[in-house]
Length: 303
Ligand code: GLN
Image (cartoon, rainbow, N blue to C red; front, side, top):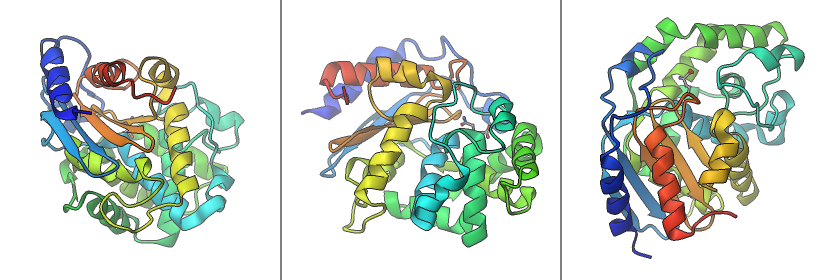
């Protein structure tokens, strides 16, 4: 299949809609300054063929896409024990909602909402130098040095009152072992990783390769673990729009409020789209449209 012309066609088609609809995330001040009229798309096949178009090499704040990598480290480090304090059901609520945590005794619904990622981060902090390991993992996966955007991390730390509330609430149920401040410092830095569409399409490559590293023979996760991440992406990766994504796109996806979305065609390729203006659900509006065009035109969907 010729992917390069298709990606160019999708970007050209959506360019007219740039900046028309949606809002750049404003609750994190450093993100509110990002110009909305940008759109990038990149993919990498299982065999290593790459295609990209638009602003595919512009680094952006990956935000909740980092929950993929935190979960990868968590699965690797803890295996089945990770699920002692973590569910795997869609929440049906906003990504930063507190409501279910009380009735469910501080156990988050899944690893892709904020509470879930904070809970996984806590387990990592108990076992390793989490910031260093996270940087090592993403840099190795995409074959380039990746860094945190310290300005975004500081901006989140200064305004992340809900995340502070989520972490303290879980701690009140005995579900967080470390100091809340220490755990959140790692969580905010993970959200503040700066990567481009092309780098993310590469870095998520193990998800279309049964857990095998995108460019080496190393096994990042077992085949079963990688398939389970794809299952969680489909059911929980786009917050309470997961049903809409399955309906319109038909691929496992993980989004972030920086406007990025990573999608996986199992056994075939990984894809990343980015456009900063968001729908009310927190998912990139044009990103979702771009993915919908991609699956409609290629017929690549898991259904
Ligand atoms: N850093 C953001 C937060 O914690 C991540 C949310 C997101 O991308 N959905 O609120």
